[in-house]
Length: 151
Image (cartoon, rainbow, N blue to C red; front, side, top):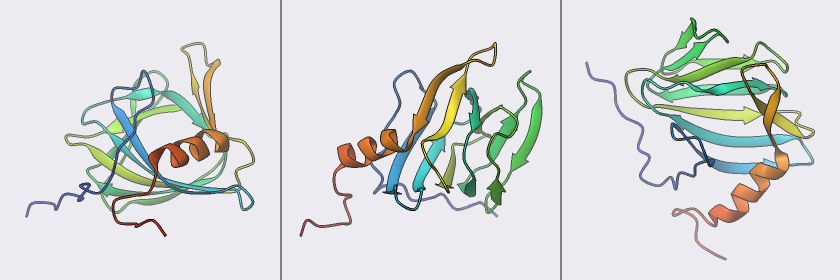
């Protein structure tokens, strides 16, 4: 049986500069409640830059499989379609990416006060933090989604 593909035709993917294997779309930001909801697409057979989550989060794999790698590049874990995981802040830094096909994953960051996650260099030093404000900016830049009409 062939797995169904996630219909991404209504998603206007955005990309961070310098990240060729990672796309995202922001669904909502509620600064007062500390919630950021976004969807990420990881290219097949990719490893997105080393990073660490700085706030609690929930993930749901919608397509493909999400692969996790330790800092040395060794495979740590594979999350198949339908995997729902509750993550903790300040966990082990890791790389992640798609399996044999692009992985599409819903992320809901919770209790966020500022930085959601930070990209690290090979010395484990922070090089690019991404916080609530960054996601607010992206949400504003996206404009209204195709399915939502202006009032």
